[in-house]
Image 1 (cartoon, rainbow, N blue to C red):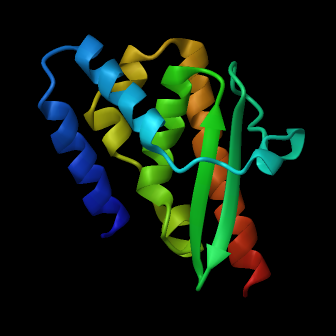
Image 2 (spheres, rainbow, N blue to C red):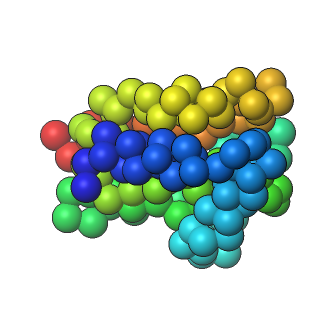
Length: 140
């Protein structure tokens, strides 16, 4: 599945819900279902800077594709990182670096997040793209 197809799948999921309380519950459910990060990666080196909550991200390359695991100490934030890694995991560094992430605006996420959570979401995306760029540069 391409990044754009995964984004469209998420947009369609969110269209089912009537209000933002239901959408937040869905985001929390996504956070509860993400692959568990190995405890050894829950350290300062893997912590995403710019998030109000603690968020840890680990990227692993297998066969030219990047797979992410993550965790957070806050349930909404864990859901947000879960959404983002769902879109990016299993893709090449090139695909990740070039992705636009239109789904965020289409589901209204930025307008329903507090400014600090919105900044944190941007920091998560930036870190994932930086990890992908680093892997791209290393392997070229």
